[in-house]
Length: 152
Image (cartoon, rainbow, N blue to C red; front, top):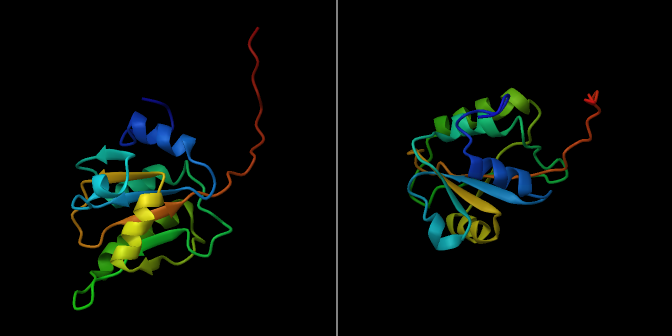
């Protein structure tokens, strides 16, 4: 374990987040998402809900500030309905570190699957909420100045 990094972030997920470039996308997918059918870089976060992963990931991950839609969820199939509490719980988690985050865009199911083929990674979670998948688009990490300590 590392200081300042949530223990629910696995070493593989931490590595993926680190290796992603600006504009790359990662999908936090519900437990039913067919990740292996769409992407070869599938990570597991079994038993972990997406709101908790959002709280753990977003202090480490800059959302794309140049994209109007750095957050995307799957829209309901015609005739089906969305539980508004799912998006609300995600927004609450996102707003902890990103209080000015842009609204979540909705994407038709098969268009969402198409995005999954281009995503940097798909993380299969323990989320069981219907239409609980969310895409995060990585932005440019701002340069931070710090006091460097040198040891002799």
